[in-house]
Image (cartoon, rainbow, N blue to C red):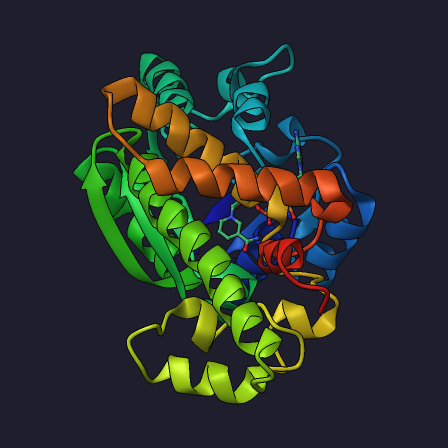
Length: 295
Ligand code: NAD
């Protein structure tokens, strides 16, 4: 069993840390939000008073933060922890951030002799709680072998997609597809219901037809269609609209970097920006359907 420093205990990090504790690892954790810290302690971790305070004797450091600026701030900022990480510890950042930020932090870690992976995840809050996440890993093969037992305690699929930053590129490709699919699924159901169709029957048909996707099968955007979907609990929990907006912005940035065309990705970024401006930024991203329906 290993000593793990875990920083960022939100919708995803909280259950991920709980699964590591359940697997028998010794966790010292930190989050800026006291309630998140308390929940992790209830799950078997010990609370640190700051990010730096998680590090004593840590063999593995894991972070799960919202965006690039938080990750760069945590490791490289004024009170950055990179300099304080014990020699030989493995660093794993599971946040979804810009590929360039992931490379920057990994290079700084390497300059200190530390191995670091970008390992963003897919699978949502349900996958984090069930320990069935998919890890999309960028970095060295040797570092991944060291990380594997920890990733396996939190997930069931691990893909090594390339060097530092590659995990983030692959994650952005996945989320761009997801953002477009969610928006168009909402539009399709809104069109059907405007013609008097029952949203549940329409969704059940689509879920076994060629329009099927994660949006029809797991996270249907229409309230009352799937009991466990965020739409059926006022779009709370799940994956925030503003996090999807962030990821689509990163996809646009990544496309510009290589001159790629992503017309639907750019359109989707605008839809989620409109949904955010409509006051739905903190709701689950499936609330984007509110732009085309009064449901
Ligand atoms: P969240 O906002 O629920 O959690 C982030 C946590 O980080 C918060 O509790 C916040 O207090 C904490 N935090 C921020 N800065 C900190 C700092 N300096 N020190 C300590 N704690 C700090 O976000 P989330 O939904 O858990 O998502 C985390 C990351 O995972 C994001 O990059 C997101 O894009 C990605 N992601 C989310 C989902 C999802 O379904 N929610 C799915 C896949 C990937």
